[in-house]
Image 1 (tube, rainbow, N blue to C red):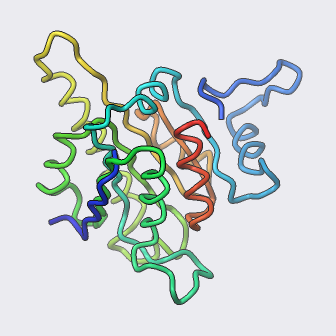
Image 2 (cartoon, one colour):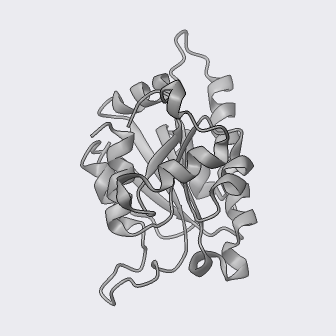
Length: 220
């Protein structure tokens, strides 16, 4: 098993970010700085990029299709109350379940990488959201360093690409894979995930921010 499994039975702007020419940031760094401060909070979630077809597919998942949520095993965010759940991403799974009832939350141990348990869930996934958490209290231990999380996320993406290539049915349904990146070093870290078409970012993984991310994904 790759980690504790929460099998809760459960399943803004949709285009790539664009702004009027007069206010278009000249660099990715400018864009990230602007979006990271949106809503007056440096922790606010935002979409860095996500093709419209990806969001459309996610938001039209069939009832029987699963959204697999892969999250790193890390400590709760700084300042979390003593009553906070041991898995700080449980609120994310619950928030996603408000939009799609078939959520499969499968944590991963970054240093352990992809396991047979993860592969089994990915095999039957209709969509995948993989979280990479690059904040000091989450990556100070060698077991959860950024490099291990990045390698896991890439492995998940590669697995889903392979699944699509091996699909033998006449009409091949795409399986959207979304990266959720929690980091304070936006440009540097986003640049490490060029293979991902859909990237959501925030500076925090507090429960309220995780709800924001789920709402962005489902167009609320």
